[in-house]
Amino acid sequence: LHTTRITLFIEEYERHMPELLPRCKETMAPIYCRYLLSAIARYEGTDIKKWLKSVYESELFNTLHPYMHFEGKKKWIYSPLVSRNIGWSIAAGKSAGFVKEKLPTLFAKAKQTR
Image (cartoon, rainbow, N blue to C red):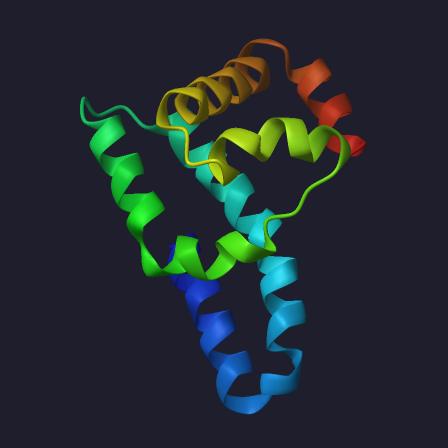
């Protein structure tokens, strides 16, 4: 659902406001990364590595990848995604899910300062 929504945003900007398309992609890149971490955290199948490999090969990921420039905490959190490191991406997503579930106060505090 989230990837469809982001794809539609990009397509609409491409059709109706192409001059703003780079800014749209800059805005969508961190949102997409947040969605990916959340999806990894919730993923319960046995083939998560295969799924994540397909994400990294997807048109949407490759469209947004050049706009994945992060600083501060976001750089640290999203760097496994940006580097397409499957093992570290899974660790980052599962860690974020653990903190959200088991340490909600810490998660809320970290989320406030992003």
